[in-house]
Image (cartoon, rainbow, N blue to C red; front, side, top):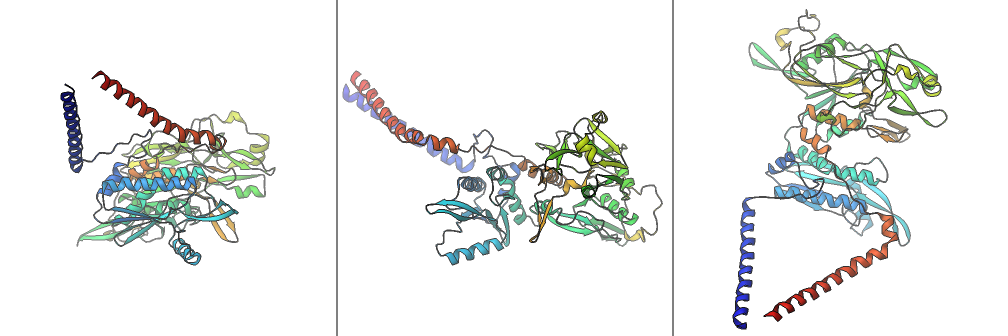
Length: 577
């Protein structure tokens, strides 16, 4: 009887073992034909966007990523390194052509050779930080590189995994960089895999923001696009080129995908307006950042008040035709930026109202306040075929001050403004225009001096479907700069060095450009967020012994207890038999 029971038990165990192996083999075979990955984290931190997956799956050559963030790192940097490796593992799961290597630039004990490598990496554009670290002899400096080199075919691109304007990055900056890992990595991959990048140009020649004032914006754009400058002169082919279709027909093609007009200060000639108009008619896209009122804070350095005067740029008629009007006024609001006073304190400055998202458009999704300086309101005019979407507005209870506008430091800062004048609803500060537009020269007699030879130009009076964004403040694009003996140092776009606050100017502008360029996936990646759950260092130090005992004794006791229970159950089971 006992022998028969043991034989039956042995057969059941053997059958179970066969079933387990059969299931494992079946799953392995299924895995060859089907690919599954499950992300069980609350914020989907391991979920790669569909656009990123599509890009990776299309790789037909080796994509090699060499990461220099490796070695004995502080905890925050180690977290960034770990997340980078996890992301590369995820990408490699979709295409085995993705290969990577982590390199520690500091592993060479030969100081001369180590410094030689440091110099080489720095010359290649890979960012590094010199951090103070505690040693047995006190403190020493540790050099940490936070970049990676992406290679694909004969193309190479350097990306920086950490974005910081500090000599010693803080945890928030590292956290933000972790959130933007996929965005930064895919930007680099797109640059080496795309045969041609979209071309974006900033207009020059009319007192626009210079290269230092748009440095951070232009640098951020250069991660995804080919960025440059163009002076709009009197040549009809400044923004376009002519292609001969046949002996009787000329076709104009845009040289650039996007034109950015950033805070011009002098008027455009009629011919220049015509060139811009025809660029739009042929499908070109434009971001207008226009100051309708000429005013600046420098005038208040030597006086207690100044006047904001209308700025004539010869663009009003064209913008009106396209569907908007920037008014000659200044908008004030109590929800505003702060400025420093002679007493060394920060005071609200109603002439710098904060621009807030006006709706749930993709461009303004998860957007915080955008800073402005001496901004006007925008009216939506005409019907036309274009769709008009307000992107940014002031807060409620605004004040509209017509030009000429008295900008009085004493009244605003010391005496206090008349709150009764703040009775206007939210005012439009940024508008998206999409669709077909009529030319500003439609049904008008064209000046012969503008159009020398119509046979050599494909003149259009109605555009193909295209897009524009109109901003009523050029300072939205302007980053602050610091001038010293070492040169000009741009601050990050949106950062105010006086209040030490960072506004969402960069995110808004990058989202705007990505939207116009059709790169909606980059907007989704930029909006991707998840929380880094860091350990409480103070709690860890105060309760160190407690957690050491919990982590060493409890696992051992658990195994012993489990063994006793299993032994007891077996003893009871066989005793019954």
